[in-house]
Image 1 (tube, rainbow, N blue to C red):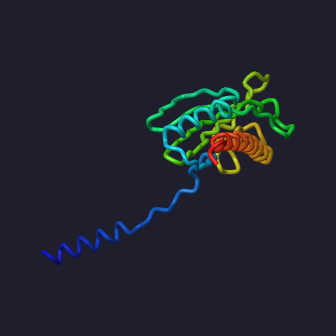
Image 2 (spheres, rainbow, N blue to C red):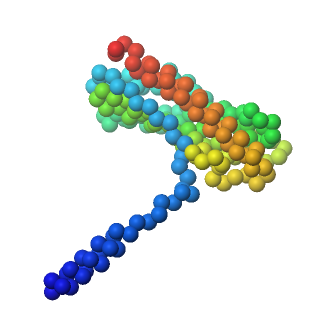
Image 3 (spheres, rainbow, N blue to C red):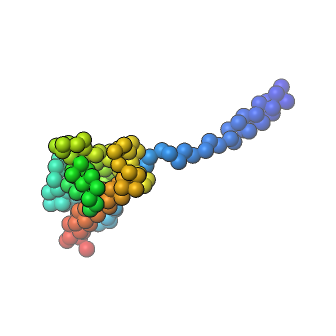
Length: 185
């Protein structure tokens, strides 16, 4: 009986020791995060975060508060960045908006801001079909690339969209964190 048990354990240990390769083609969404520490309790910090939200993310185009839960310290919202490409190729078709999701989480002494799910929607009012880049990821090209663009132009456009969204969100996030810190240092 003990011999069977030892064989079973040996087989089990060798089977569980086999690792699966990590897939590199799984898209990872572009995400921007920042955390700020202030000497406030959860409720005070939540109130301060709500006030800061109204003057920063709340002023962005398309800003909409989705959820605000004071007890759990969570604020969820959406907004967008108006986008116009720097390159001339397909400028009118790719001009549009990059929508994003905002998650603000407050705990005693710390407020964390997470901005993710950047989704590009092109100009659907053009004579030619719009260019939608879709979910912006950390990769160099979109998940589902438009077929009407050369790869080099697509990579430049994709990089331009990510840079534009990232720059704007970082600016607003910096303003948000500055408003949280005001009067608490």
